[in-house]
Amino acid sequence: MAFHVTLADRRNALSDPLRAALLMIGACLCFASMLTLVRYLSADIHPIQSAFFRNLFGLLALLPWLVRDGLPGLKTRRFGAHLVRAAFGLTAMVCLFLSVSLMPLAEATALTFTAPLFATAGAALFLGETVRIRRWAATVIGFCGTLIILRPGAETLSGGAAVALAAAAFMAAAMLMIKLLSRTESPNAIVFYFGALATPASFVIALFFWTTPTPVMWLWFALLGGVATLGQVLLTRAFAAADASAVIPFDFARLVFVSVFAYLLFGQIPDLWTWIGAAVIFAAVLYITHRESRLGAARPPPTT
Image 1 (cartoon, rainbow, N blue to C red):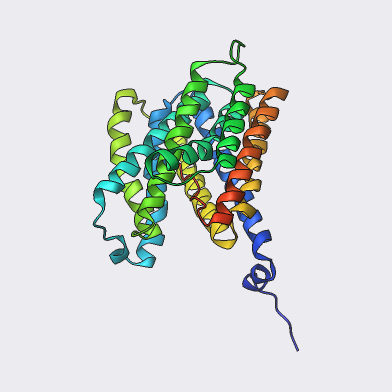
Image 2 (cartoon, one colour):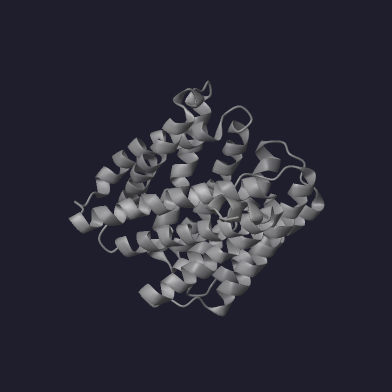
């Protein structure tokens, strides 16, 4: 009797944690590629213009999925909340893209690991969630990791670092809005309204910094939107396949991929303090994620 192994068979043979880990690593590769492209293009194209094209091509890439799943699922009675989420998400994206053009890729990426720390503080202050002493302690320790990376008074302290931290703070705000929206809105609706609102908004802002793209640049922009969208899809599936506490540890691969790309393309080598600080931040995030998973309050991943 013939025996055929299909792709579905192989996928089903993988355990949920292993599949989630592979999906998360794939998402990290996509996001690292996205930031590397933004850095590469920043020599000729303002990062805000790159943000517009990332949104435009990202939205176009999502349309087939949205049409397949049905447009009625996009109906909403919470347009105002979607507008706020889009404002937070777009601000985070612009700050992130600006930061990688102003400072080394690895340092900017390491600083964005603080987003869950900001989210923990924001959930307590604005959503009324109970955050006990151990999670507060982990949050403080995580921000100490930020100080290790920045080393106040050292040459590494720059405007780019402030912009990267602002990106992390707005990522956290977007995460909290996604959590609120997910109580009544479908995932497709949340993704669609972000793209539909952020694309025209970023276009208006980009007009002030506009540079006419060359034919080759259009290919880079399409790739930028494509890898960003693929990263979002892989990230969402990773969190659907396993608990957040099993997925988050592999997010550190994002820093590894970014460091490799930064070295190969730009000759940037992250120093030891960047790795130590990133490890401290990441350890704090892992602990908070573990506690929130046990309490059933794990937050959605950032989707910049």
